[in-house]
Length: 574
Image (cartoon, rainbow, N blue to C red):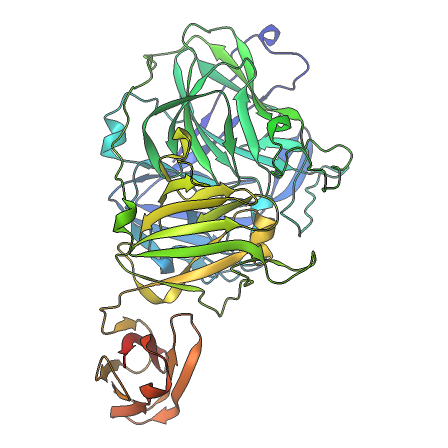
């Protein structure tokens, strides 16, 4: 474990006296292969002499930065001591559904969740946070979140800043609301809690000291709902080198960078020759005029409450430049990576997604494809190995940052127009504006699980908790059976004929007397038939399913014996 703090070296006259000078806190790092996180109630000193009640991972607020190596086998141990259920989702990472930490992977109070997986992702910046349905917003708001940095050989060959806490800086941007006693104020509902106090890495009014050279900022919008329009106070350029899913092909020179909740960006700032200067990282939110949360209110929207920073330009953090120590990076690389392109012609399917409501009228809840999230309903089923184009249509409400678990995607176009260079890399969150269609292409590789789904949802946490979320299974249509571990009777399962026309025999065998339930589901997760629900003696057993009574297609046959569960696909044709 490494704990790093940045020390302010400038004399006070170099920093504008109107700003408080709180040294930006740099979270400690954990390196594997075993990572232990303890979620627990705590307190944090946002303001001098005042302890604010919080949640934290291994500390008062937020958690350590997890350093992972591509190709490594890692073991996570997450202990839940917050007194209520939670989960932990590895946002952006390509892991099996059972390790993803979505709403189905509940960590009960006082228990430990221990997923293990191989790091398959490219070098990039991810983050981890709770994902318990209806409680994600509150748990994140109170402090349960942290950054993940993945390193790999490709990134290591580039001349990039990578000394953590010195020239490679984690920057977790959040807005928070405090009451008169300096306690966090959380109000569920709407798009999600917004605040009027900026907090970076848990620091209010932060100052970051950087050496005169090229520095890397790993920017994460960890806010529940606010969109930021980031830029430097002197309008000097910076260079975006990485998006949600890793390095871009080449640096993109910018003066403004819009960052929606859940999005990450790695940027380089060239401070060569600027020792002794001071400037600020700003959000120019007066430039957000298209209904973005935190931007200028639209004519049909109520004005922001008194004291709000919505629609204003405000400071994220101050940056002070000093003489660099050692051998700082002096130049911006011209080339970064070669990205895999997925041509539209390679797509096996186009999948529509409508961001709308579950009914008419202003009181109707927000939904996707007209359906509010239901833990018991599988909304979509994807075939393992398929390439798909998802069409995200925002037909009602404000802008929505759409996030998908399991995969990274490449944006094909926004309203028929190719994405700007900063959105041309691999991503897992995209902000979709009202009346806009965003199309992206992706592949579903490596993991199939007919029981545990992945999520897709709006990353405004109030919308997500309110039901603007769906879930999808990735299945292997060629699989004959998938056995889940458990206690009790051993189990074997087959079905014939496959494909079936009028009937199919479900054959199975148990080695001890057990309660058995045989149920058939369609690919939307709806129960089609219960073939048996009772007790079976040891030995081979069969049940007949009259497949002629259902439409042609692929179905899932699930047999549960004791605590054993097996699922297989079965095709029905005419």
